Length: 168
Image (cartoon, rainbow, N blue to C red; front, side):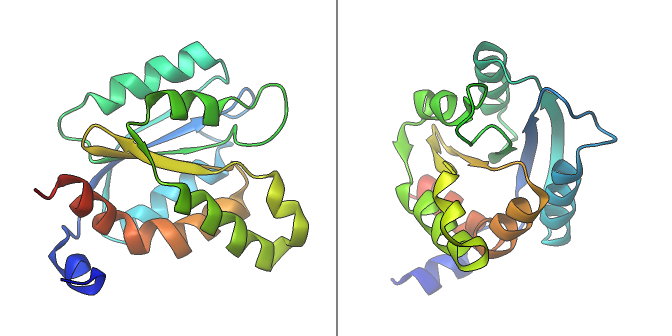
């Protein structure tokens, strides 16, 4: 069975958590979180939890672990903290939780970003991986990056990702 058949078998509606990592944003100023929630919901998914977490590795890890243990959650998508500054620790926290990393997500995100913004795309450390029977996807915090990742990678493939993780 090829990937097209797999995609047809995948659940169309998933329960997702959206977590923003930021020291400066709140619910009113988190444009990226709002965009991500809207795009997921417009694709038929349910955003059942949303939270902003300060960019502190221990707080980030605790928040992610709490959500990844929720039985009714299929995936967690984070925005923010994937750059090169001293405060950007999302990738290190996520990789410490992955049971399998999906390297292709980051590679494809940087490739499609390169088509839009040129060589600055190499500064992104977007990543994704499996944690138990869930997906953890970490994307940059800019609105443009969130739109790009959601439209080109997450919305089209999230159900297929979960189907692959959970099939026996």
